Image (cartoon, rainbow, N blue to C red; front, side, top):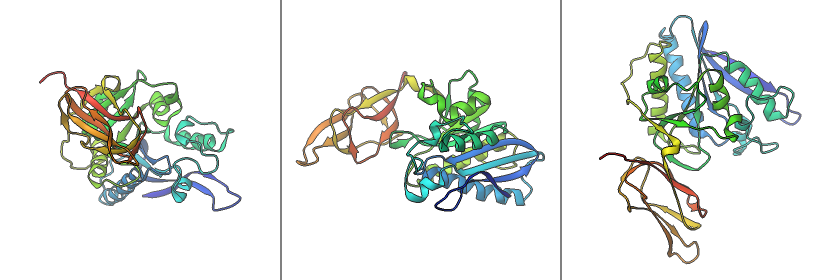
Length: 310
């Protein structure tokens, strides 16, 4: 294992800002894995730490294939993590909306450019990502529709679902979109962001190790995982709540539901009564479930994979 500084930025008030990478093996640049881009992505940071720990062990045993290099970058926003801020602490900008970056631009644009220059040297890219809505997902691999998406490669992760997303204008400045335009890049989503969910974290780490093994980058025995179901995000049904208040979720992601099933209630924050009920609009599987204790009116609280056949 070689510890490396991918990008650094001097600071007049505190220690220099550094983006640290861990390199395993040597030779052809095979795969780069990135963890936390936002300061609150603790689950994503944790999964990278477990990958570093595992790959260090595999490298000592000679299980990194000849002429293969793996780079792991656990965090791109350590400043935000240190003070509990999701975005860049100086101007509250989102580094994940600054790619491919600008070496002469604002601070977060320069960070994005410095990191992107290095990671684009690798054949495959994996990002442990988080969603903009707080909640729980069925672990899955996500790819943007860029005409370069490869669902066959995505299925090598062995996760239950491969999700294809039509990129919006806002998505075109994200890491995943720009990384995928230039090569093969995948986003791996697990259940948590600001906390650690051990079970899904283990799934995420195993999925990356499975991918690396199947691509011949490492020698690692792992179980086969799933033959992932390919779904289009546009085909999922968004379920919204009808009022703002205290949120009481009654079902969780992965549950199978029938049309009309009670999924959640919104409680009056002062008087305690039920203000609104959320019911399943169709038979299917809950792919996403809102988890925050508070909810605003018209918030998406569930995403349902509609079952087409019984």
